[in-house]
Image: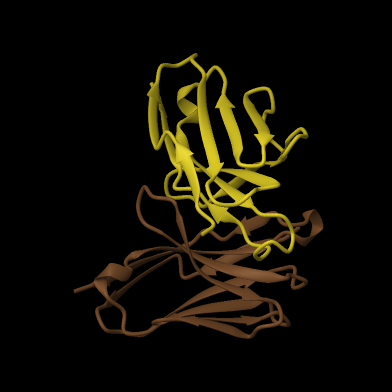
Amino acid sequence: KQEVTQIPAALSVPEGENLVLNCSFTDSAIYNLQWFRQDPGKGLTSLLLIQSSQREQTSGRLNASLDKSSGRSTLYIAASQPGDSATYLCAAPDMEYGNKLVFGAGTILRVKS
Amino acid sequence: GAVVSQHPSWVICKSGTSVKIECRSLDFQATTMFWYRQFPKQSLMLMATSNEGSKATYEQGVEKDKFLINHASLTLSTLTVTSAHPEDSSFYICSASPPAGAFTDTQYFGPGTRLTVL
């Protein structure tokens, strides 16, 4: 059964810093991995979807990498801004049950101005 | 494209009443829809998977008689919380997945419904 772990649980950085959020998963036979953003009391916003054949995906200041062999993904945020403050979730499919997603507990990010 | 809506966005009800939450895929047909629950400061936990025209598959520990799921069409799934109690208060989020090969094999998430049971 897939298990997804995210570290750190919380992160507070000054504006402008580059930062890395980590995600690890136990079943490496995944076909993709997704990163989401969730603002307080809101739903999920999909940030990046990395297919298993890709090693990374970029969208603006966000870059996500995927290393299936080690069971790890990282989300890199460049030049962080206060508007980046949110909870970041990664999710990997539970390969035993098809396309069910298993979410990590999330990293709560606060970017201070 | 690939927009999923939920209605209502929030609801407050008395203990013992039933509440229905709708999940709609607005611009694509969803053969599969998923219902998640999120308690405060926790991550999303899958409650059930529903396929159009068939019974939902519930995760272990989720009471199927309490959380009734109906996926009657390719664009609509409903979750009914029956005889709601304060411990059912939570954020309910649905997601929808298009047919394999339609877009990608990803899920598209709705904005969530905040349920508060008094």
